[in-house]
Length: 198
View 1 (cartoon, one colour):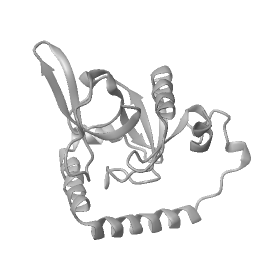
View 2 (spheres, one colour; view 1 turned 30 degrees about the vertical axis):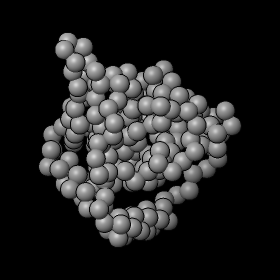
View 3 (tube, one colour; view 1 turned 135 degrees about the horizontal axis):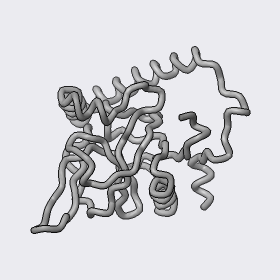
View 4 (cartoon, helix red, strand yellow; view 1 turned 180 degrees about the horizontal axis):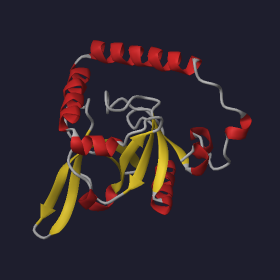
């Protein structure tokens, strides 16, 4: 589907942004209402699986539908987390929450409550294949991403070098693309500045 057919919201870097709880709630409500949404990633916590500037498509789901290793979107305390699903916690017969972890983070996030799961990463926009399908079929790719993420977590030099190379590659790719026309802009597209005025 084209960007005109999707809601387009910006996912901020949750460690550096002053993104409001209202903006996060708007993202959550849009995803719950439409079942699918696109977000722009700004954080570095999922390097090298996701890079700042990537546009991702998220489909709504519950924790029971997710397998360990998939990348999911969750909401807690007014903040959005787009991290890898580690597993569920069960307290006797009722679910008591789940755990997430960024590939380039030193440890897992604090436990999320069961209702915090918003959706799973379906694909990066611009890629033909499904990210979730690759995650489920190719555990080796997940393990490689985690290993490189650990390197980026503990080596600031490796992280800076990777980000610099990635930004050069994407800048080079942009010069070969045809710039979008005004007709390509949809009234349903929302930018971070528009969301900030809520």
